[in-house]
Length: 309
Image (tube, rainbow, N blue to C red; front, side, top):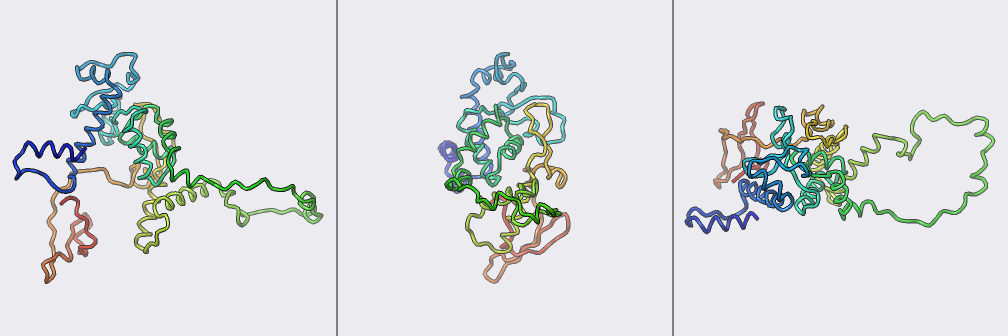
């Protein structure tokens, strides 16, 4: 879609104004909005027509409880009564998608992959930050069930039925019947007795296996991966992800640690910062001075990522 829109634009402008190379952020956003708008026109045809004419949707519509409206890009969003909430606009008024759409499936699976093949509740909570999918829980569960990597991880051997227990295993020994055993801690090799914390260990292992597979890591990459996995586990909802349009977002451990559900910062306005660059004898930038709210730091160019060329 990005390259199709670019081709159409390049055909209308002079050669000097044509765009080439990798897609720009603006082009990606425009293509995303175009795909969403086309999907909504296909699945909510009558609702889109009524909203385009400035009328509310009809009472028999499945969107009537969402009080939908069209934004400046002609995309259907949820209305509701939390417009004054101190949360991003896309979270206050998420984009409405039908559960049967092909684009919906792609968005669900993309979110599932980005979260390290997390479970249904984690994916639902992350989707709610931008999208309102009809019958969201059933849709997410259906799409996650078709994930081949999750199927591969869930597959376990099916050993034959074990033989009957021997007589000695069915009789209580005399010393045990008289004395008994009192466990203070979990016995060795019994993680199933750990309860909630062992379930979180499993979640961490699942994310590690999905992200790393069989790679050999350096200490720095391992530390980065552990931080990402920590964020994924802490982004799980502690409360039910409500289907009420006026309800607030679900509470996650990240809300207590960071004040937001995800460690990823919301897109903001990037402003130019005056930084000093230092070039080598070959005129290539080797180190830079970076200005942050904590001061100015000198870092090698190998650790500087440019946001946009």
